[in-house]
Length: 440
Image (cartoon, one colour):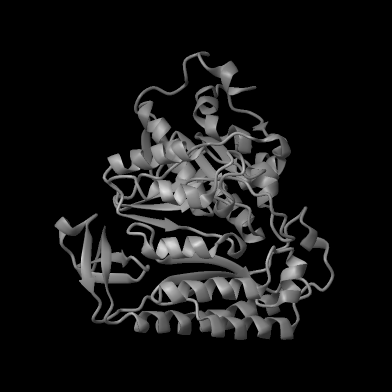
């Protein structure tokens, strides 16, 4: 069954006012796609319900980056089914692509959509007629070449804009290429048009998201740097952030340009994964730690107050106590502002899943805990370094205890007494004191 075949078929089961709830797991890319899907339903007259509410249709956009992510997906599906056993349950996302039959076997699931069907989800749901055995519409991920444009629009201050999908890298631990396929993107002109649509909503900040955004341009003969330069010219957007970029794809020229840009923020999320070259080689990463160190040193030279977040995997197969200590010391030297920490998780179908030298799960957890303590120290040091800095903050709408929060250009969380007129406003400030958020 294809989307073309079901267009113009029998009238849907639901009239205007039917309710649909979305439950999203995983990365910001998933959240941007969910938001785009939700807008399609709202435009057709559906009412959007919260995931905790009873709805006619539940749509779960899944993640499968770790074993724990798979478990959370299954738990979410079962919980939503209990809210309304008569509801239609539709599951898409990475878990649905990687293990469609496993998802279809969960009680309550009616429809499982793979990566190539996600963009046509509304049409498939609109064609549902009778309950019974779950229908599975999967695909050969190697043949997927379509691009589903998406951006989030539920937040009044920022939007996550999908600029790229898929990955041509084959890191030993990662299932993303198996779940999302090859690297692909819209042309720069199409991404600029999406950014202009976001600006028309009055949103001030755009976060550029994707699977491997530094690889942008593989399908259009363009480059990520050229995209940044084009987005700089979009009127109405005050700030752009880069969600995550591989160290081997972040060039000195790009760093220098960002340093002088008025819209590209001094905020970098750079995956490291390990500070041991031996482990990086086993992971099949495309750089060694000297490359990572060079990128950090270059950023610090031209943007001393830049926020640098780092991904680290603890307990990869073959990682010895000495390898871990090497990573710990390297991170101490690099002094990033934040560590995104993950215990290694075996993923079926990846080379790492059958590698010798498995690290006990208790030891993986212990190494993560040790790095969490380091993260708290690094995070505090970064905040303290910024006292006295003159910068800007974009205020958000949430109010807690009479206070509102916002983020500075370099991603410091700032508080001030709540004032409604500040919501969505970029305001110059001088940091005189900081309430440091706890490490999590």
